[in-house]
Length: 582
Image (tube, rainbow, N blue to C red):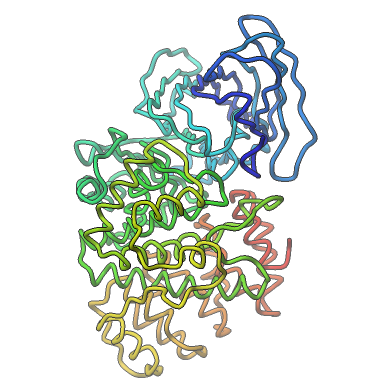
């Protein structure tokens, strides 16, 4: 029986417990070639269904003898079912295969798409259901596996995986083979690899940063507080169970702010603002070490369990490190984003509940801020219903109870009723209802009120004493402002230094405003911005603003067609939609 609408896996046929991967990284052909050995929980006969997507499967063997297999009909986003027939009890099998250049979970970057410009770069992004384009697997978070990997790469390059640090085990004139080990069981979407011109630097006893060599020192400075964050997180959420917390800042084509791959978080270079103003993303990915990686959603229908809890944990970390006022501002920014997304999805007739049936829906197409920010509000509402002290006990109990397990929404609901029987909160409305319940938490603060009042009263030509504002305050001010004309947009850019800032989130907000206002000559600013950005969150608003203007739509579509070969498939889909190319 299939328990996950986005996977062909049937765990009654057996569960994969471990994968041993052997890959040769072929940059010229844009392929990973090799094999995977899959160890099952028990020897069994009969069919075994695995997930694949754009894989060239060459053979399947068990105990040195071939097994028959068949690839099913190709599905637009689920790929193809690989059905293996076991005519005898099989506990371990070996699949020889290669990925294809179209693999949705891999990005093959040309040298000119990197900062250094001398070597190509490979990176993966397997969430939500793209691990199947790297390896034939039961690609559902209901199944957790340990893995080992031997990866052969060009001699001049390095590699990292969502595993322990690489150990070189062989070298020839043409390449070197690196060994990786992931001893803790992880859901397949956390399988990750990056290969390229990579350097590293230790920034703490358990933390190391990786980046292209020319970026390493700036990145190490930007994230120097990682070890401090890790220690603060342990005080809040319990022991760190993954031994090391390393991370890599990738080339600009990486589509997200971060990806919480265990032992090796992937980060966008747009976070390197030169003033540590965007390190909250690192706090978010670190928090996933407890909520998401350790306790995992059972399917994409339960995605809020990963992200709602992690946004809550992220803001608890920000509060511990930088104070309650800063955490409140972040919560308010999130609420503004959420209300915009709720309105947009409601206008489209799309669900805004935390859980809803996603059968026949592409998980990438369902991605939004709802599970993040509405999920955060729900977790916060639970905390306020019982008090922080009691909730902290509940949180650590939750993490310990479901560590290295997968959980669905219905199981969480039952757990809350068991562990917090006195919580006066309407679980059904929060979990399964659209919109926001009447008791959704608010986050008032004197500073927030001050910024809001200023934004509502400010007129171009008035002085704006913003020299001591931090980036979060500037973003809140920009979000609260009403519509601006050209004069107001230019005055704002001058007052806040928006043309010069290295903060990509501020640039995104201002460019969207400037496009809406019809600032002349904005095309050059837009080209410069989108040419160095691959992050969906920052590209989509800018292109959406262009797409809303008849005089800019052709310009936007031309830009998309020029730049989209550099983008991840999810980014292409999101951007093409808002400029009318989907």
